[in-house]
Image 1: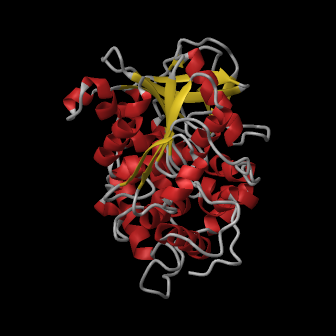
Image 2: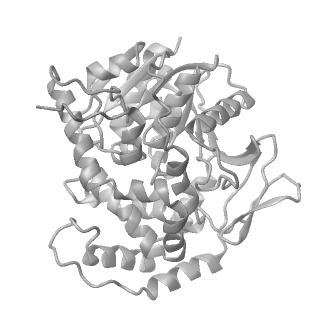
Length: 427
């Protein structure tokens, strides 16, 4: 394959393909500070400099408003094609909307989140939401896991128990993890930045501060999509507490593509990027250049927001074009509804605007690293390029199935990969 004219910086692909609740919270918080942060017109109790537990309860009026909007949709005309080439088909969107309006139960996921260790904390002037779930196993390894877009902490719900309590899920006690699952700034129950500068490097520094504040002097980190970018940035910063990283989306493009001598998986990686830029990259360009503009549409219309995200579940899951084969409607709507209720369409999109520079041009990431390649990922990392980027690579594996939302789609495989990938980093 000829690639003489193709030169793609690491961050250039992130521009084209990276990352690939509650609007009203009546919280049971111990914090008493009067300062508060608003979410869709309702207030989140302000974070303090120490972790503060809270519970979610979305007022029924917010859920009623959502259902009213879903009952009064102004639909576009039907697409003139019989596939997804122009976006989400009208019939598919109507089916999802009908289910959302008539059958979906937000209280179910709300209850699940409330059963976990939810907290907020102020770091670097911003309130950060996170889950903190301690394993019962004394020697569990602290693990920081970061989601991406259009994902959320909801992606990790199915892997929490197997990771923290492996003996109940086919694992061994020595496979156990203590979990810290933060929500990215501008997403979910974290505050929305009111100033610029919250790129992935700043988030990475914030995450290390969080782990230190929680008392962890040695931990590992994991991520996909923007979570992979943050985790890679953390690896580049090399804080003394970080023992290693795992990525299920590793962008490892060289600065200049060789004109000859590419291996088959490297040729495929070049095709992956070209295909993504041609067919799937429009959302990125919009969010990276004008996130506020798209925010007006997505913040006002739940169906618009759902279509914006549902399209990614269709394109990026390993489902043969039918995302319901790997994710239930409830699971997809848990994620979509979290974005709606927290009014984070615009603020989450700004992550793309913040990360337009070629921040990864510095090259290698010199911490122990593990990489799992899922077959329907947006970009499938070639092994040779991965080893060039991560000279301390201790684990590299191409798994049998799964796509961009690895933990969400294939929780058993994801858990297996984390157990295997981090095994050599435990001591």
